[in-house]
Image (cartoon, rainbow, N blue to C red; front, side, top):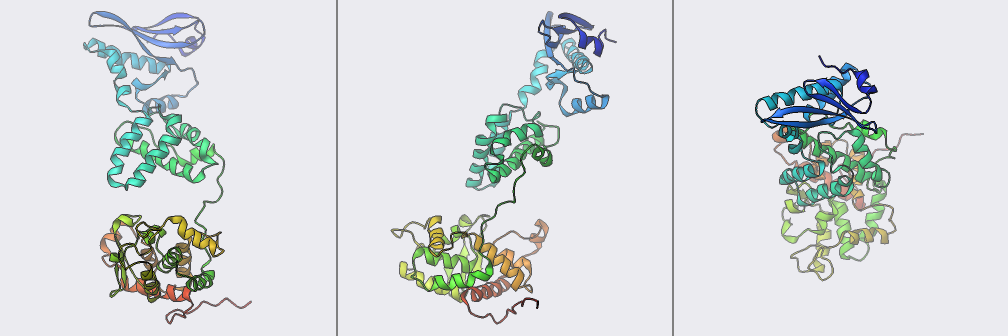
Length: 417
């Protein structure tokens, strides 16, 4: 049994106070307290610093939880009980003829800092990610997190550290802040899988408690689907500029603007009325074929006048480069609809499908948008691309926005007042 007690440690005067078996409490004139172990290793007497003195009041349960969360050799601040345990472990190392200081520092050297873990996690994750996503993942963490907690070891990072790292962008860049919070946990989860971290990942609710409340999550501003017919019909009646035709085609196919801007004639089969988009232009990096309605084909016929039916369908200036994203946005603004976004028409389509086409399964609309549907198991058993159902849905959508009554759509009338 040692000579010191919690009370004597707390009230010790400046100097060296022995606990027994080589463990000492050092108290500096400033009042700073630390633990030192004196041992004989390989015939030489050595003083080994164990860490600062932890004087915070704790229950036995609290001590046990703290010890189990962080390896004993990594604790920078130790209670009397923890100091005795660490001293005992290092004495055994010294008696075995090994270097107790090397053992004390071994785990600390092996556990990476957050900055190092970002590099390691990125190197692993990028094997299954698109280049653009992998670059954004690393850049966001290096810009917004590493300057704050980059030097901290991954085993000691808690929700308070994460909260403080996010504070500078939480209100100014809420969308980025949410992405970064998720990415921090991806890095820490990777660290835990490697055995570098034992404690649970910082809880999102705990992180948010110390931060301002965000407003509603922003979405791409979408034109109400009931307003889409008048807008599309007005566009069709105007001159067929590349940007305007690309915008009409984007709406009719419910595609992403990047897929339309990079669309090429060799991807189109007019006889089969399909547009097969290669994986490299798709967000999910999976090829996707969509049915082309007569209205969409009519837009392509107009687009042929812009070139020779080869290469890009909607070429940019000079005919050899794709349109910029702003070109479609400009067409939308010129039409007096600057409050909406091009991407928002996908939401307009989805709302229309839900309200006007309730007999078509929701899965069909999701597949039309090139979204992943169902669980991994469900996708494994769903071998059909539901092309016939998707063609029915897209035909009804094209007829709706161009003003042609769809034979298979029964309008939903408002209830009588």
